[in-house]
Image (cartoon, rainbow, N blue to C red; front, top):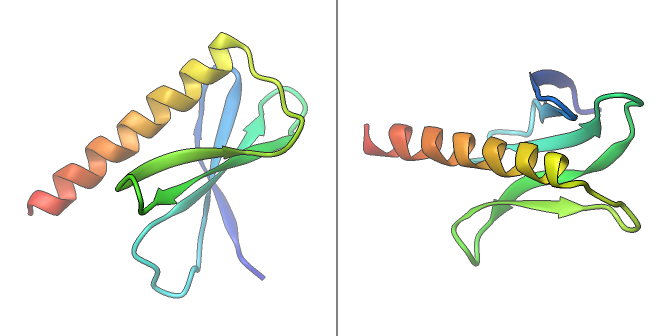
Length: 87
């Protein structure tokens, strides 16, 4: 079973990092509604675009605030990836 740990909370969403992925090169974050804890989707590496992307579950609706949380989180993890790649 895969362990999970809270990575970061935002105004509307919580992002949970999936741990113990057998030395995979990229991470997966699970995106949960902060108020009720519903799983909304995942943020993971999309090789065709060479960046992290959000993969929503079916029939999930997002407000502009939720989309801003997702967008800013992806920007942060991409910035962190670029920093570590330069080292």
